[in-house]
Image 1 (cartoon, rainbow, N blue to C red):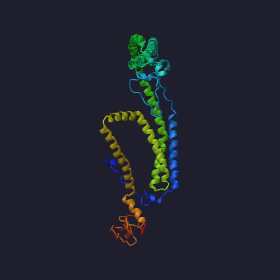
Image 2 (cartoon, one colour):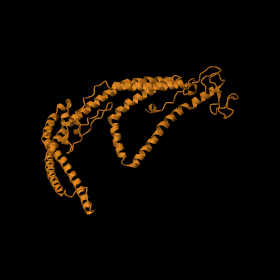
Image 3 (cartoon, rainbow, N blue to C red):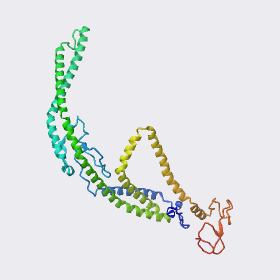
Image 4 (tube, helix red, strand yellow):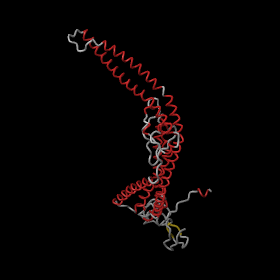
Length: 402
């Protein structure tokens, strides 16, 4: 068990140690072409994933009437988010009786329930209350007009009195409008009484509307559960199809890249662009699935909670800064660790006739470096002659060090 978890030391070929970028300089034209290849591959791969996602047929969306009676969780689309029709607002005593139930076209999930019958009851009740609402609307309009006239005449009468006190010979506003003002105020009281009576009559239907809407909410609960299951299954089929498309491609190019990279091949850079495209498409498929499944809702809840406390919000951004340092810094550290592995450094410096430790020239060196004293040579186990310590083959007998 411990051997399984024990980290295995990397095997480095002394003939092709890898990470020798200086030997494979790519011209600028090649770099530009690789960037174009990456962008084009990503564009066409992204479109291919979208087209794969359109192969399964999505579940039939619920009618516009359904969303006003949603009481619990409603599944969000992951690949193609369905937009609920904006026909209704949430239930309240001011808007329920004005909703246009005639626009509701029920789908199969709704037709096999008491929902259509409940909407017929609701429509019949709405037809009963509509004349009272229309009359109430007319009275409100008349009341508004009367109050405007009262305000205007009162203002003109007040200015007329000021003109009279000032002794104006030809006043602009007469003061003989007191009688019409009294009549308008009486009309205002009459209309206000009518409005109160009509509002009470309309409000008397509130209990019946609320009872029907409560029954509709209960009837819609299993409908939403069924729809959520259908939507999740539809999106899972899309996820499987996209993974069948992107996973083999990602695996093939990644293995290909590892083989070329191990050989320090100059063509590894080409496959690197392919790996980048495959990795982006693979991450897109995974993240879309988990994002729509639960991450979006979870992050929205957490962010709403965090925003209540400024200190926590600052700590989140601070944590993001630290995380970015950790992720990208670790990636650079890993690359630097590979490139500057002592074994790779020694082989590269021997090829340039330099000391593996201090890079001093070996032209005047013997068994030890004249600058740092590093032991450059040792006795060959096969022939007994002197050979370089960090090179694989003895120059005298050709024996390879194990």
